[in-house]
Amino acid sequence: MLKPSYSSKLLENAVEQFATLPGIGKKSALRMALFLLKQPTENVRKFSEAFVDFKENICRCSECNMISDSELCPICSDMRRDKKTICVVESVRDVLSIENTERYNGLYFVLGGIISPMDGVGPSDLPVAQLEERVKSSDIQEVILALSTSMEGETTSFYLYKILSRYTLNITTIARGVAFGDDLEYTDELTLAKSIENRQPFKK
Image (cartoon, rainbow, N blue to C red):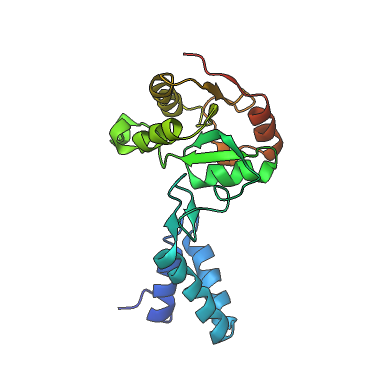
């Protein structure tokens, strides 16, 4: 049975799918669906196929866990990058945010999350062993802990510090230009750039 606000079950289904996206309400979803309806069929087909292709063929870089089209992402395979510095971040979005500053030329390691007992995420749920192995097997001289400054982020940074302090390398953290509790992806590029440039030794 159709809802009174829709004249078509097909339209309703399209709106429902758009509304599953984060930050998209029913009104915005309706606008998107009606916009696509006005487009040539071939354009809509390319639009949908792009997402299917993305989902089915995207992979994770074997070195840093960044999303990539191949085993090694463009950052890890770029010989111009500083191979002795790794910036540890929570998510792919954080990598993109830092790259947009154009002030960092090292490598990355994406944890894919942070320690959060309330959410059931512990150290064993994160690829900490992979990070440690990378530090052991490569000539890494500095690890930058660029996690969010929330309580969970600070807890994760301290845990990583305890693991990595066994090795001879500098362990630094981003400067406090990023306020306590802030996520990197929502920090403006200038503040983030300065926080990276003015990084300091990690303190327990």
